[in-house]
Amino acid sequence: MTPTAPLALLAVDHVLSEEERSIQQTVRRFVDEHVRPEVGQWYEDARIPARELALQLGSLGVLGMHLQGYECAGTSATAYGLACLELEAGDSGIRSLVSVQGSLAMYAIWKHGSEEHKQEWLPQMAAGRAIGCFGLTEPDFGSNPAGMRTRARRDGSDWIINGRKMWITNGSVADVAVVWAQTDDRIRGYVVPTDTPGFEAPELHNKLSLRASVTSELVLDNVRVPASAMLPEAAGLSGPLSCLNEARFGIAFGAVGAARECLETAVAYARERSIFDRPLASYQLTQAKFADMSLELGKAMLVAIHLGRLKDEGELTPDQVSFGKLNNVREAIAIARESRTVLGAAGISGEYPIMRHANNLESVLTYEGTSEIHQLVIGRSLTGEPAFR
Image 1 (cartoon, helix red, strand yellow):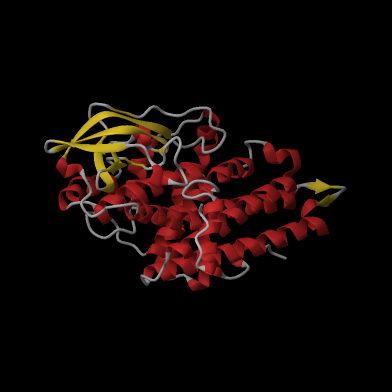
Image 2 (cartoon, one colour):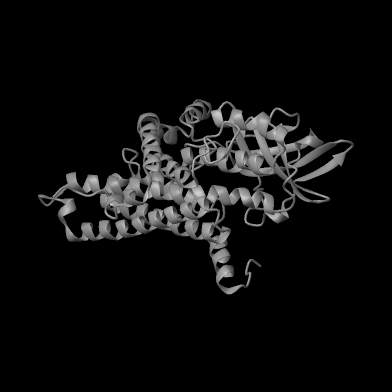
């Protein structure tokens, strides 16, 4: 028999439009040509040609692709999710670059910024000529961003910002940072060019996950910005949380891509690997693993598509985003680990992408909200009782 691709088992393409399939195929070709041949070495070397990639991704049209106007592509949310799926099938670090650029930095400016902010930054960022980062998480405040210590105070007509941010994707290559800070009037966001005096972004090293990604600390030492730098439409924690929901939506799709890559790699390996003079794929225990993994992969894909349809209809809630992020990343990491067992010792080799994906997914599991936080979000939705403290 001719083998069936894991996601073809449920004929998932049947529920996608022709345009969505075309966008997905275009991004997959890009990943085949520009990411897969190089990403293993990028991961090994813990480096990534971020500026070159940003320009390529800008030409592809995926940076802020789901935003309207300002030279953004203006696609559906579902199409954006499918692009995230294919990018993360290459590597979570590549999808992170795109997510932080489009769903965090660009979205913050698009949703909460002034017209001046939008005109100045969004066309450049959509083209990849400018890279953005998003400064929310701090060394001591991740799941509880309301406790952040970064502070902005008025000084005449300017703002002066002091503080530190941690685990910031794109930080040391960014041209602009969206920085969130406490003020006398709630939490506010600021558009901060990274060449502003007092702004530094040292890159973080010694990572065992997301090595093909730029991760930095942001240090703001009396960074002076004009009053116009403040995002006028964001007041309180709802501003940054709205951006996080955008990024989490892309993760729900992206995790499916990483899982699909692991499962397809394992199936291909098992079909070629001979054990006791028979293909590994012909053994019942191996097929049982593949069957169980395909079930979870297919269900995760359907969850992602359903969330995409809800988002395109303007009906998607934060609780539903938490459902998708929690389920799909949890299942993706389980699929990566089980796929590794099919390859045995070969599974830990950089010759195959499985261990790289498994390591990356350990970070994806906890960034943009840990699994525990998403469990509590869902629990609050089901019971009406918040249990965050």
